[in-house]
Amino acid sequence: MSAQATLPQAGSMLSIHQAIDRYAPYLAACRNSLTRDLARAPAAKYLASYFERGKMIRPMLVFLSAAAVGGEAIDALPAAEAMEMLHVAALLHDDIIDGAEERRGLPALHQCIGEAATIGVGDYLILKAFDVLARAAENAPSFSKQCVCSANMLNSAVKVSSASLSPRVTAPPNCSISPSHVAKQLRSSRPR
Image (cartoon, rainbow, N blue to C red):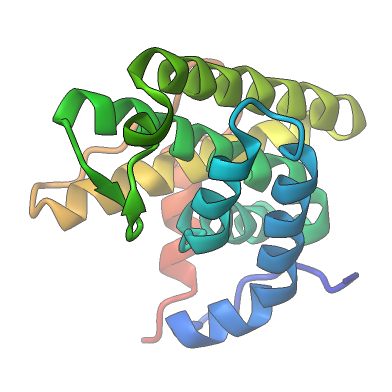
C-alpha cells in the first residue's frame, strides 16, 4: 500500500465506486487497525461488531482529504481510525439519548451492557481517538492536522447537503487549511 493518494486530473472525477475501489485496501487496513487497537477496550466483544459492520464513510473522507492536500493515504490511516472511533462514540451516546433499540442490525450497546457502561465506552473511544491522533501528529504533525480538518469540513458538508440545507462549512479552530482551499481542490477535479 504505497500508492500516492491523488485527486484525479482537472476535467475528470472519480465515481464513488472508483473511490471505494482505490481506497479499499486502506479501508480494510483501518478496520483491521481498529479491531486490533480495541481488542482490550471495555466491552470489546460488543464493539467489534460496530466496527465490522460500519460503512467507513468517515475514514474514506479522511483518505480523500489526504489526496486533497497532496498526501498519501497510508499516512492518513491514524487520522481515519480516529475519525471512525469518534463517530462510533457519538453513535453510542446518541443511541442512549434517542432510546434506540438497535444499531447496525444488532441490539444497541446500552441494551446489552447498560447506559452507564455505554457512556463509559463512548468516552473511552473519544479518549482513544485523541491518543491515536496525538501519536500520528508526532510522526506527521502538519499532515495529520490537515487531514482531520479537511475530513471535518467534508463531513459537515455531507451532513448539510443530506439535510437539504445550504452548505455553510467552516474550518475547525486551529485548522491550518481553509474550506476554500478544499473547495478549490474539489472544484478543479469536476468534469467540465
